[in-house]
Image (cartoon, rainbow, N blue to C red; front, side, top):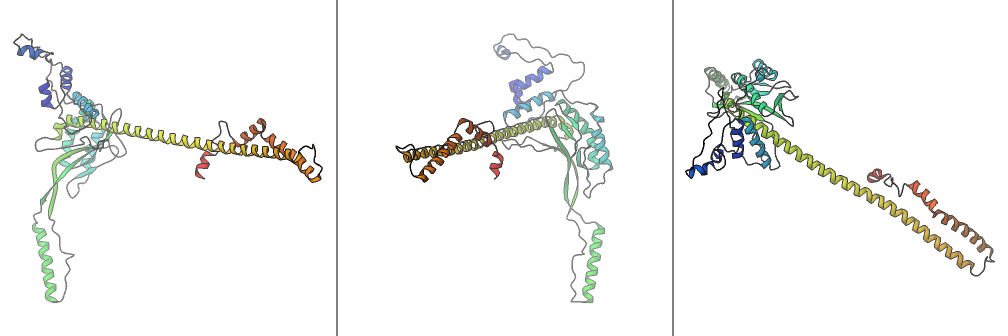
Length: 390
């Protein structure tokens, strides 16, 4: 199991799960050691199957990635081991709509037709490739269903959806560029233009003929290559190492033979997108927590400043009362009432002022003052927002 796992670039645990899933017996612990020691060992025979079964081990992606995505890929490869899945996906409205739209579209100068919209898969392919899609897309939807995905319509084109994520998809055929061989008609047009130019020069040796109307012969021919590729949306992880998102025809391998690999890639990409979203949510929560902490600190500082100013005002009043009391005592001296009339009038006024100021420092008066100023209660932060922007 350990050696075979290396060949498949999969963990021996995952390979064991695949075997167990398909009722394939594996050697128990110590089996090989007993065999090497010459002890009798029992080989469990394969179970009989009624129908021919195919077990798929999807290709490995050796791109460096983190543990979470590696785990997601291994889980997807275990699911993919069920083999090719054919289902009613062949009659899926999105597939029918995509194929019908491709066959109705007008080819471009390069021989490609493009379709896009809410109810079709975004495609840019040749009409010949469209016939391939009639076979490829049902297989892809079946393999994606094994991984828990279904196709759904969306504003910018059909996309895959799982319980957690959506992944957009597009199919593109590449273009081959070859040197252009001028046709007889093109050469004839150039020759006619040159004849016209030479005639103009003979009529007037000083004439100057511009080349703006010279027939242009293209340097290259662009034709569909017949090789199609599938691309999922780009997802960047925190390590900036993006999971594989593009699958294309190769020299020997076609997309039709890669449906299990594509479905595994879809599952890994969705796991990466979930990871990115959760990390962004965590960063947003951390940012919001810090903002709330700063806001609370600023609010408490505002409240403390208001309370400190109120205290300072009270202490000033108390100092004023104390000074006024001492002044009255000095002026009266040993006499109950001074004999000077103006001083006597001043002292009478000072007594009244002292009584009024002392009354303002009583608990009842302070309570009324604090209530009016919204201080030392649950509303100490009155006008806090307006204070910040003033």
